[in-house]
Length: 153
Length: 127
Image (tube, rainbow over all chains, first blue to last red; front, side, top):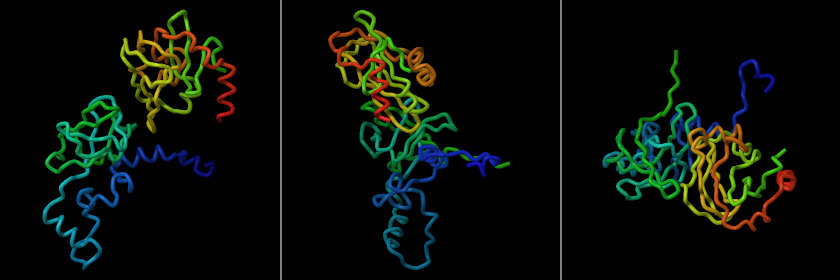
């Protein structure tokens, strides 16, 4: 710590790093992506280069690409003061459609943000859904990600 | 270190009793453990709770913590200042950061609460 002091080095715990990665729209394996989610649902299709031969999952990826994903991971911000957190249920028209995969107050934006999978027809920016917080439906609006982008001068 | 005139719970709430009414908040130790409080959920006036039941929650950036009733009672007043300015809970937990006022249902429950000294000892062993 003393060596980095003149460079402004500060200690940062897991909570701080989780908030920062979420603001930057970076996904956390085990939360936002896991064995039940697909590349295209999570918006990670750019990672895999097609046409480089067969690999485990190449057929199902091609099929999903042709048909289009059924749901999509979206960023949202809460419209009220409540904080969405991981595993809180997400509803649209009183139907449970998924759950919050990551959620936190964003210190940088002074908003409460999160990620969730929504059916593709509901996933457009500007759309709304309800996050169930202690049995209360709280409104959230789909926003584009990353939530925060550092300006580069 | 904790005010003498108040009684305390092992859930880190304090209660200040005046006759049949009381003021309830969370302790200095509780707000330190939470870190910066960013959101507080409190009940409505007229809501009734038994002792040890959850009457609301406080949230830091990292986590949600439930608030538990030190004694059974009916909510007579809610601190709207602390709801709108959650940081008050960090800066003045025994003063402006009070949470609710209640009408005490069963005064005998006070005997189960900790004195300031007993609470000091409790958090010393917990740490």
